[in-house]
Length: 68
Image (cartoon, rainbow, N blue to C red; front, side, top):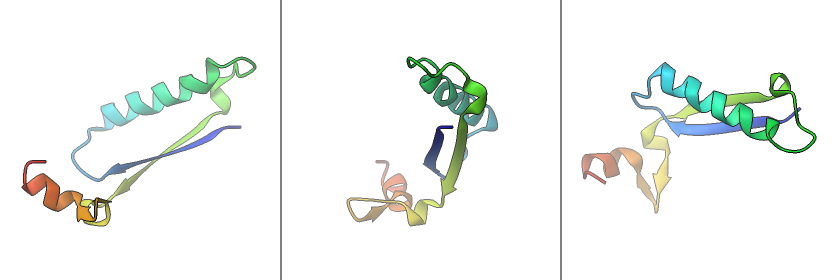
């Protein structure tokens, strides 16, 4: 049973977009040979505070404030 863990920054991502993401990721392994049952796939979205997510040593919070 494949397990997929997706980490995104905690922001204003609407539940509908998260559901679309989960649906798409769930279908990907089902499209591979030998993997036909998407009902056995587990997908988890973890939301990380932007102060705890860094790119190049800089927080996403700071990058967002700078428009990057």
